[in-house]
Length: 354
Length: 273
Ligand SMILES: Nc1ncnc2c1ncn2[C@@H]1O[C@H](COP(=O)(O)OP(=O)(O)OP(=O)(O)O)[C@@H](O)[C@H]1O
Ligand SMILES: [Mg+2]
Image (cartoon, rainbow over all chains, first blue to last red; front, side):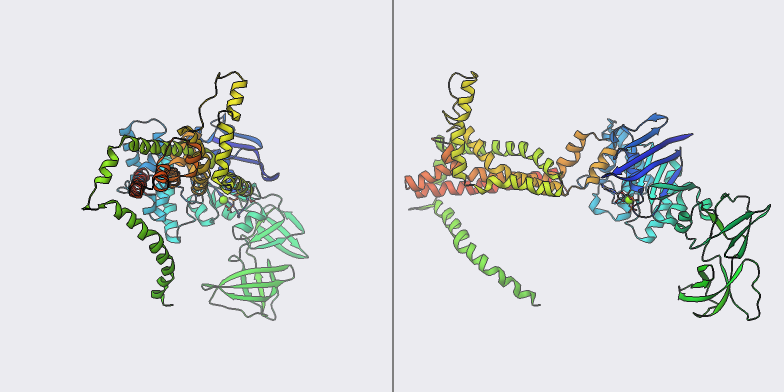
């Protein structure tokens, strides 16, 4: 059963719709991340859940109760901000105790809970310091501790790691996941770092222009994107807009301008009607073309247009009769611009999307 | 760049201040400790035994204190409101706020005479409404001085506070709210503490300004002396320069004392400010 539900939500700023007919259901104890390009409405969604923002239409249900109009301070949801938002006039202890003091909890109990949460975020001994005396990573931990200590029903993160350096980001995301799982807190996590989202989430929602395009577990999204946008967003750089699709028992036959491609019907493959084929640059096979070669199944001949050195591999842009393709290839073999080559799409590497 | 020589740029200003301010101040202070027979603090002892003078000093302190408190009470909410406005409206509101500063204190004091005088607007109104039988004595009392001073200094504290409040991140207020704070709790636990620096600077400006103000108390206070009018009376009317110097020294001492007390208070309230 869902812990909370956003139902047909619409949000508009200055008459411009940011979210429209937005639906999202999240189960208890899960970490769901919202991933999408800048400006797609991730923060807006989070602010809506937190109650900082009112929807123009739609409902927010929490434990089946209508929470749409419940004010922020009555929701008991924790919010972790991108820029930490620690109170500069309060010590670390008082920052963390802030929410507890508002709840009229006894002094000894506050002390116990603050110390306990400091231990969870590995910051014992820092309670007397002030926010200005901490590093970015430590500040973020305090922010997390401050949100955790009130035992929130939902924990909301808005790009909590984007101000930290790369190494620390990896450590902190492991930490966040560990705490989230240990305490079993339902969490919504916003980021535009794909790896970050995939590595810590139970489910990832890919958003585009105020709509969730796909919501599933990270592996499914990675392997089976459902829409062209999602595919593009997670690195399927090549798209073929087929003219025709014929489904057989165990395979699908697709054609474009007379060129025919076959893909394996996979048990997990979801898309039943899509006619756009998507392939990652790493999954295309490229080889030099022999003059006498007759191009075989799933292959098409073309010419290298651009060759770029990427360090570990080469990236080629290949021109073919059905459009340009981007191909990555380990650097052992390299092809010159202008060279005739053959591209092959392996039977099991292309996905069909809408 | 020869940074070493940059300090030469300070020289004209420093010289000017030294010759026309620092030296005269020390001379003034110096003369109060000497008479024909050498070093003495007799002048001060006489002063603090004088009931009349103590009365004036206390009245001045009281007037300054009330002015400061009223300015804070009126200025704080107004400043908060202004700090929340959009860029354009904020600029306009700030312009209105400092507008009174552009008129002379003399003009303003005369306006207040018209409003609070025996036959002034307020008394006429209250009489005609039958709320009082005889006109209230407001003009030429400490209350009149306070009214005039509040009018004079309110813009100052508002502008100072707006400056500080603008810099409070809105995320801090949201964070407090999400932790369970009501509007009131956000105000008292986040906005007020973070406004302390502005509050201290504003209060110092208002208090010291009220303590040393001359025109407003001279015009609205009537026979009610404050320390600056007392000083003027001694120096110009009575030609008692020794007494005037002692009064001036006491004023300086009180001012320095007030500033250090306020700073100490600020440190206590906001250890990391
Ligand atoms: N206060 C506001 N007034 C008007 N428009 C706004 C406001 N806040 C956000 N928007 C608009 O709403 C859209 C969604 O904004 P939102 O902050 O939710 O994006 P986001 O997905 O969090 O992006 P990012 O990854 O850059 O943080 C954007 O087009 C933005 O310009
Ligand atoms: Mg955002």
